[in-house]
Length: 142
Image 1 (cartoon, rainbow, N blue to C red):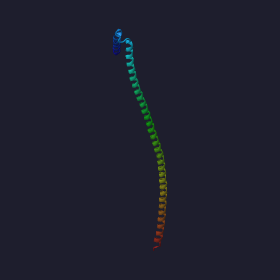
Image 2: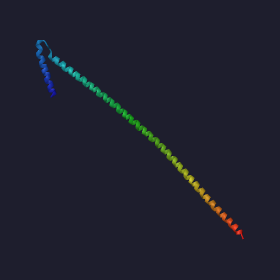
Image 3: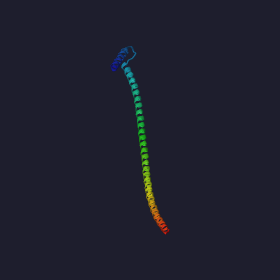
Image 4: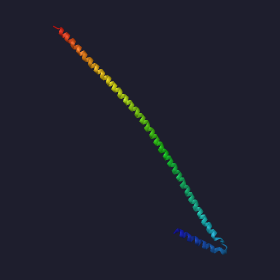
């Protein structure tokens, strides 16, 4: 629709200007038409070129933003990995310390158990000696 309209208006413009040829107003009407069309096309080309540069600029900004996001993502992943590795190492040390503490407590329990056994044996021996002495003392009574 618009293209047909443009053709008709350009043809009308051409016809109107070509009729003026003999009165000296415009001896080269098709040149004027070509110049008007060329000027309009140049203007549209400049507009499109400007728009293209804006789009290219936006693409560059988007690429820079994406690169920044990817770098930030890698930095965060790296920091998390380092944090987990540090925590893992700390947990291994803590588990080792707890094992040592458990072993120490077990060793202490064995020593304490042995001491209690020795004390019980000593008490039994003392009781026996005390009973023997008591029997001797009681036996000496008339």
